[in-house]
Image (cartoon, rainbow, N blue to C red; front, side):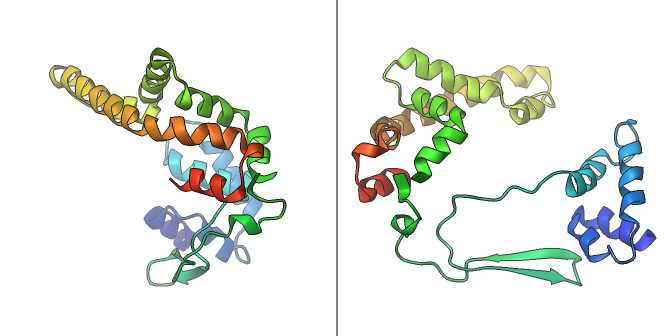
Length: 203
C-alpha cells in the first residue's frame, strides 16, 4: 500500500490502481478517499482523481480522425501510461466512410448537445453587438482565467485585463470571417454534399 501511494504521489496517474487491483482492497481504498476528500485536508486533487477513477464512467469518443494508430504502453521506469498517438497518418480524411455519412454524425452531435447549436449561432451571427457580448463572455466566464488573474497584484491587474480583452477581441473578429462562412454550412448540413461539409469542418 505504501509503495502504491508513493507512485500516486509522484505521478498523479490513477491507472497504477488498475495494475495493483490483485493486491489492493479497492473498496477500502475508495472508502478512505470518500471520507477524506471533503474534509479540507490532504491532497484534494489526488483524492478527486481516485474517486473519479472508480466512480465515474469514462467518456467514449464518437468523433476522431487523423492518426490511424493508437498504442498504449506502461513505463516501469516512470510509472506512467505512455500513449503513442499516430505513428503515421492517412493523407485523406475518411469522414465519408462513417456509417450514415458525415451529415447522421452532425445531426447526432447537434441533437445530443444542443449547446453546440447555441454556440454556432452566436459565433456566426451577423449582429456585431451580439457576437462581441458572447465573445467577451467566453473570456470573463472562464474560471481558469479568473483564477490566474486573481494572483496578479492590483496595480498590474487592470493593465493585464485591458490587454487580454483587446487581444481576445482582435482574434475573435479575425476568426469570425471563417465562422460566418462555414457554420451556416454545418448547421444546414442536409443541403450540402459530404465534400463541402468536410471542407467546412477542417478549414
